[in-house]
Length: 402
Ligand code: FES
Ligand SMILES: [Fe+2]
Image 1 (spheres, rainbow, N blue to C red):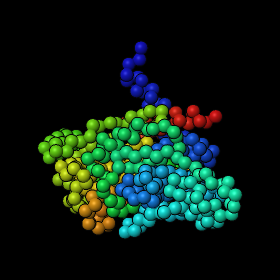
Image 2: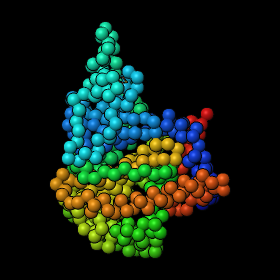
Image 3: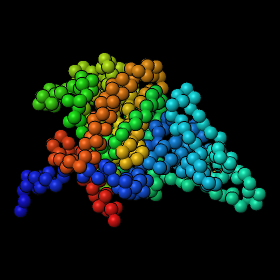
């Protein structure tokens, strides 16, 4: 009978990084477009963006464009952004940058021949249709689901109970009552999986992210083998948080199902930092009832396309939007309390700086894995989540490669 260490060795030997064609092959990307992107929950926007009847956003993933909109009853609806006449995209703008003026619609009008749809996607005026026979045509519908103050859509009919975990992690922050104080979209010339793999490990942080390492003491504590200092910080942070009435959510590390995976871990920032900012000082009021979490952070993901970090005064959400086999957009949302009145530069400084560094790492990795000389390499201990993701993806691919 094998003991655990021999199983571990065998697994380590098998589980190397993915073969180069997973990041470069058009047929593989096409399979992902058809069967993976459509079956996973996709976060359209934080729900505070979709408050009013007719408020909407547009999400583009590969060749698909999806409208998520509040209908006349105040429910989120998702539908294909493709006109039922001759297919024109109906709405162009994602409507996320107009901070002072978030557009809301009374109906959706196709710019091409002016067919008009109601907020549920039902065709109400079909120019040229004198018989009235086209009434009843609808934009193609997708499912929606709200959890943790975020609005998702997906092409599957199932209710993703995994998303309910978000209520436990984000519940005390009430981000549905907050506001989006900044958004940025980052274009990355790399396959989406390289971005996801990069975000699943922070082993690259010490050598690549000096600003992040300065803000988050634990990065260098781990690097220098000073877990004793980390443990002191952790105990102190948790005690203070709980005394103040905020309890960290139960930790869940890489839970992997057939359908999706997720994790959430909480950590002290250390070195007296209260939040993720240039000075380590708070940038605004606490979100929800999380005031006593200052000095710590939650790091989490929900499926391969959504990562988020939670601090006392803001939540930063990274939505990974594959564009093509070698291009990915990372749409980033900074959600604060409604009463936040700090500057966008202060709010975005740390993560904007860190993301530029990640973009370079990931783009250079895309070049490396495209080389005829690339061979899958062995994961190291601290890359266990990245390793678990590649296993998850390989299982998905085995099922769909035929
Ligand atoms: S394509 Fe939309 S009205 Fe003609
Ligand atoms: Fe990074």
